[in-house]
Image (cartoon, rainbow, N blue to C red; front, side, top):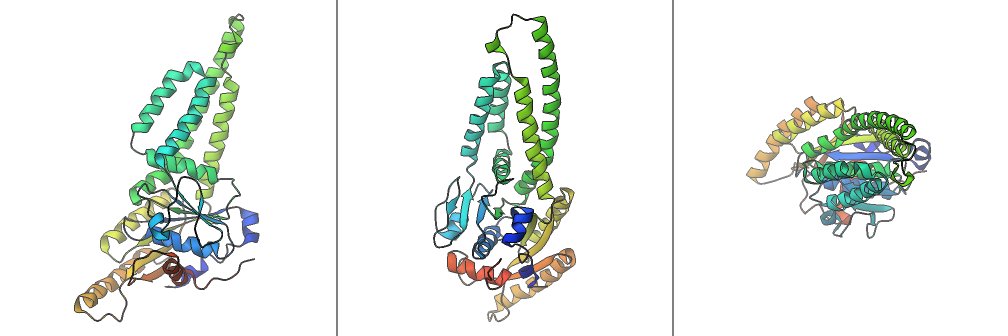
Amino acid sequence: MISKIKDTLKGITKKKLEQEGTKYIMFGGKGGVGKTTMSAATGIYCAEQGLKTVIVSTDPAHSLRDSFEQEFGHEPTKVKGIDNLYVVEIDPHKAMEEYKEKLKKQLDENPMLGGLLEEQLEMAALSPGTDESAAFDVFLRYIDNNDFDVVIFDTAPTGHTLRFLGLPELMDRYMTKMIKFKKQISGMMKVMKKLIPFSREEEDIDYDKVLKELEEMKKKITKAREILADPNRTSFRLVVIPEEMSILESERAMKALEKYRIPVDAVIVNQIIPEDVECDFCRSRRKLQMSRLKMIEEKFGDKVIAHVPLLKTEAKGIETLREIAKILYGEKKNSS
């Protein structure tokens, strides 16, 4: 089962992308298992197939800059030395500022709602989950955006990621309620305008415009839910290490992903001690790992499973990441 993951990217060709749209690949798992490494290696592989690729870090503790030994920011930045590859490290504070700007525009057009919306904004800025909301806002920007062939998400540790992936359903319900509320207000205000014909035009609120904006946002969120659940567009890959805590957390994550109808197509087992180790300690650790690999087969046997050995060096730098890409997907081939 080890090398089957090489087949998971074979279907990503320019021709197929033109028919189906952008491909989304997400890497998730416990903290410290190597999600960023696998995201970076996959990004290099896709880019070297001629696919315009962006890796988006939704983890506030960004590590892609360490993997590529290069600084990145809130907007796509080209990776030095790799054509077609870009990186975005979401800045939650900047994302919140951008959101405030959008809200300010709505406030200018809807002065009567100003106090309520400003209070909600301040609460949102202080509440837990802001990072996930900012990440989802960035995710929405890539929906129906043909700038990239492949979007790879280097996610935060499991708990944060599951909250992030639950946002489309939560926001969909919220937008439905908001639209219903706006329709009621809009109808009421139209009646009021007939009863008070001398109301000044500059004080009027264009509820129809607000309603249209809400409905457009709901469409985007609905589309995001559809894309996340579409195995032709989205694949989620769990990264684990051969240790019980990592395996059990990933098992729980997979059940949660099934609840959100997000397809998991592969499990990558990282940091496996090579067979030819000589020291007693290393042999003992490898023996334990072999028993954990059986556990992984039992729990994830219906998924594609890949093995990545423990490296002698740190998993950073283009050449090292390229070697990991070869382990995962084989030698690069030109796609048509």
